[in-house]
Length: 205
Image (cartoon, rainbow, N blue to C red; front, side):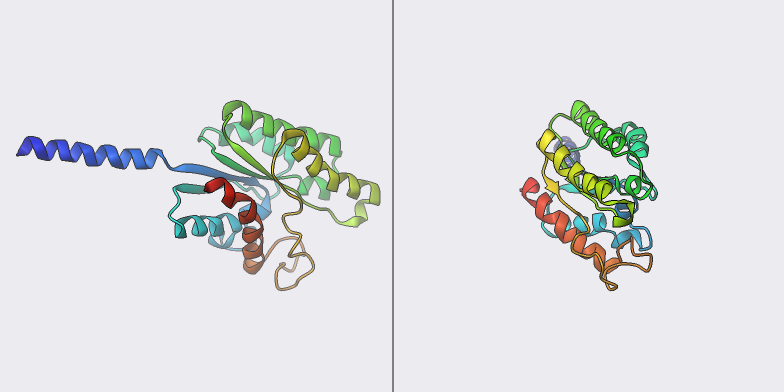
């Protein structure tokens, strides 16, 4: 009897370990938009994505690796450390702070490409969703246009699904944007979560 109980216990333990091992990781790698600056982290869009995942009983964990103030160069320096955890899907949302600082877009594009290359080299089966951003027009028409085309170019060159402008549906709304005119309110994050979910959900099925 004791032997049977031992075997049953081992079976349960092995099953639990197997289920735990099967949990896949969705990495949200970005700046203050991803991090949820100005709102509780539970209200930021990665947490809202996790709620959707849980409601569907899917075995994925959404990891919020957003960092306020992060540039593409900072992301490139940080990605090796972040990749210590296996990545199954990455939502890459970086470049907005580069644009606000007027950084040379050739450098920004090169940094984003290197982040993509590093992820694909270490986790060849990982899927990457590229999230585009936009910058205010005061930086000049040429810079603004180059910034907007940078993301579609990267997506096409790497055959990645693209969210053209992750905040496109919330810009200009006082209800959806905080007083700084840059960061979403909790309601704005709900809109972003729906935008991201449209691209993400087919990968989870």
